[in-house]
Length: 302
Image (cartoon, rainbow, N blue to C red; front, top):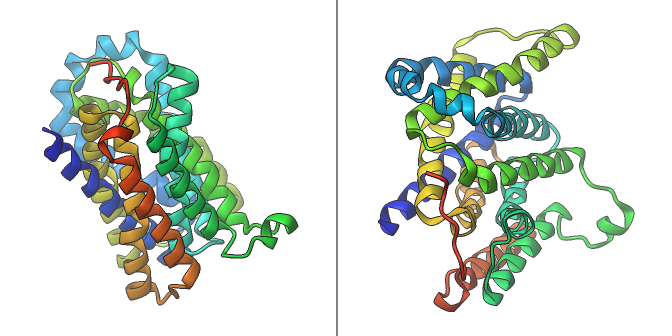
């Protein structure tokens, strides 16, 4: 069962790596909120015919647990994607991917603070190495950046997006006991409703975009793969092995995204990127040592 979870949790970062690279590639083509809104609207419409019966059967459970459903929809769908797409307008795809490696540490901190979940010493050390690797990228290898507080605005926006998705991942254990397909239907629907007023505001202040071939294909890709496929794989993988161990797979995003960005966007792979990746991989090795695993793993509320 763990092997299936590992496969699912590896597929999700692969899809999300393509998401962030594509988002960086279409910054001059599609506004960020419009990109998020149409991505999730299309994903919802594609999924609805397949999940309608499941969603109808689970409606009572969703209504009983509407608070956590709204929280998950607004953090994991509305907030995360809007901030991520906005952030990549002023940072690189590689940076945006590597900053997300701070997410496992945040998931563990949230689990510890909110759910009192115990963790091992080597696990903490491993996550620490991952955080240092991500920080190295945010500072662009220059510690004086921290003193000058001269962060790129996009880095900070992506960082805030990571906080929201860490909350989403940590609180997945509180989701109602409903079928995974209906959970996605309701999550996507709530996310679209949260995005709608923000999208209207963007249309008013910034205007829309032309639905050319590139724009349509880009929206179709992010709806199908980073949307439906990735969220199904991620949610199921977290169900199987828990948010702390599963969250570490986020660190695969920069591995996939860096190669894609170099090949497709012509971005440069610098020494501080490689150093950050090395620290991240070392942290993953420490995290997955037998004696470093979670002492008490909580299971999702299924």
